[in-house]
Each structure stands twice: as C-alpha cells, then as structure tokens.
Length: 319
Image 1 (tube, rainbow, N blue to C red):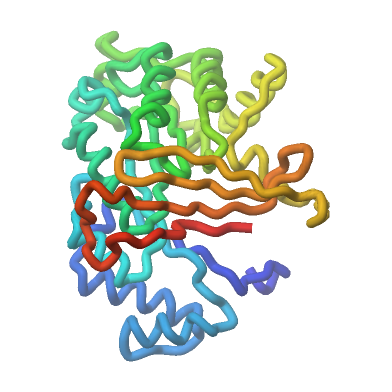
Image 2 (cartoon, rainbow, N blue to C red; image 1 turned 120 degrees about the horizontal axis):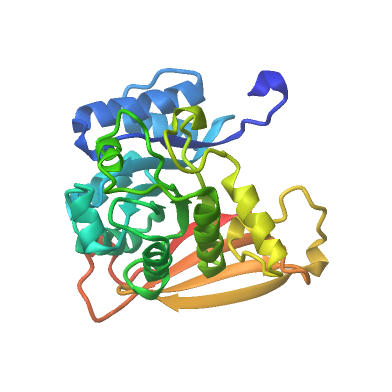
C-alpha cells in the first residue's frame, strides 16, 4: 500500500470467514500477535507486548474485526475478545424469521441473535450484521418485512450491515431445491426492488457496508447476474425521488467541507439493554463529517461483565 502512495499509518484489521471463536485460543492469540508484529515491523514476546508497542507504532491498528456466530457469544467470549483487542464483531443474522432459519439449516434461532447483540453492545463492541434476502422459504414481501425487524426489534439495531442476496450456485444444496421447483431465485427487478425498500428503511446511524457477495456472477446459475446492485438500487431510489439515509450514503468522502459549516446532531434510540446516542457532525446539506456512538447501559438489569457495570461506553468514534 505504501509503495503505491497509500497512507498506512492507520490500519483496520479484519479477520473474516468462518467462525473465529471455533479456533483454539492459543492459536487466536498467536495469530493476532503476529498480525501486530507485522504492523510493528518487529517480533514481540507476548500479545501484550505487541499491543503496547503498536499503540505508538508508525502503522497503528485502529480497529480489529472478527467474524463469529451468535451462538458462540457469552460473557467468557466477550472477555476473551476484549483481551485480544477486538473492537468490532461481524455476525451472520441471515434472517429473523424462525421458519427461514430452520429451512436453511442455520443451526440457531432468532433469540440467539438478540442475546448476542445485547452482550456485544454492553461489552462496548461495534456490531456488524449480515442479512440475506431470497433464502429458501422467503419472498420479496417477507424479506422487506424481515428487514424492518432489524430496526423495530429493540434487541437488534446493528451499527453496520452487509446485505447478501442469495446467489444460486451449482455446487450448493439449494440447487437441488431449484431443480425440483421448490426454490425460485429473484429476478434482477425483484432483487433491486427489495434492496430499494430495504435501503429506504435503514436508519441514519447504520452503515450499509456492502450490498452483494464477492462471488463471480459467471458462477450464478439462475437469477440476477449483475455485480453492481448497489448502483442499480441507488439509481432506482433517485428515480423515485427518495434518498438513502445510511452513513455510507451521507459521508463526506472526498468532498471539501468547512468546520464552521458543521453542527452537532444527536439522535437517540433505545435497545433492550442500553440507550444509544448517535452524535454526528453534519453540514447544511446533511453531509456527515464524523460521528460517535455513546452507549449508556440500563440500570435495571445485571451487566454480563461486572467490571463494566454503570460505565458509559464509547463504542465507536470516526471522522
């Protein structure tokens, strides 16, 4: 990155794919330590030594992201991830419909997702969910309703979200359902309409990170075969005279902006365990220059980590 002129003094490190929590903990610790050693440019004797050295290194790790399943998350796992230095956790929600989860052999129920999100939020983590329309048993109408549950269910409210429309591949078990006529991939028009309706439901405090899976569309047997679904959805939203309010659509990015044009906006919402304050600086055109997620735990319920009880948590600050 540096050799092509890209600044690399701030690094967000993502360890993705599979279930991080299923690896042996000594391997997890070794892996994170060696990642930090790579950033530091020197070996360390322990993870703690690598972390301390990195705090003042030329290339600092400003975020460590792991991906795991909701049914692996408990108080012990929270402590372990905090020890490793994890700041964000990605979790495959896939659906909040019990029947859809069962039909697709997810192996967990919706309550597991609720419980995991509550624990992660109370422990100060950023929560990045994955949600999948067009799973076996879903329809465009049920998907739009299911997406709405992410924001009406107080236990959910993910900070970031990846939307992964199901892609039908020849080597997947779903292929056999399609051959028997028991599964119907959405057409391009259907999937774009679902995405439009989902984007328009997305609150201002959530970032839609991605809207398609990194699978070559040449591998897709049936259904949509374009990789620019976000662009198509954005064009349709504009045609309808609407605008997506998610963080990614409002952030300033490369635009010039003056500090004196910014004002503080505080948006508050309640979860099942906290009161969340989304503090943001926006200009007159509602372009987002920076934000902070301030999480205040409820006082009427025990905290999963006693050492954090009665503590406000800054779960994220980003400019």
